[in-house]
Image (cartoon, rainbow, N blue to C red):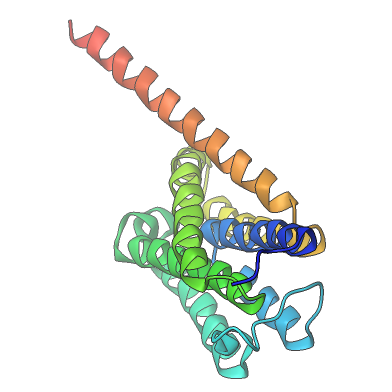
Length: 208
């Protein structure tokens, strides 16, 4: 195999940023980033394209319809069960799994489309989505607990969807910002773990 050129290495750096950013956005909420990536891929816009990667289904009409149905179903289930009950139950677990799966697919497809190992993107994408899901979940749980009524708790999900969409759009425009998204997710996760440790230490002191 011929050695990679400097231009190829630069392209790889950019597309790793794109794949990581899309995976991070999917970790927040998977639906709108998947729809945006599929729509951009359909027109091969901003370097987003899955047609030649073995993941062409990510920009197919059937996939986009399935994602839309899943989005509507998730809102319906949340309204029926309540935001907190949905997050604590099987719906929340299923959503977390879907976030990780979509993040893995989009990162893998991004690398595969540009001639790199899609399996590496799948692994890294799953890791990115898991990272942000683990980092954001405690923050969202605390926020829901402090909100005064059910309408505000449901609205929080809308804000998460909007944040995920905006992040995916920004990373599609400026691929290197995917690295910034990873750094922010790590910062959030470390902060959540620090607060959990302080809470545990406080409980130990109270028990003495």
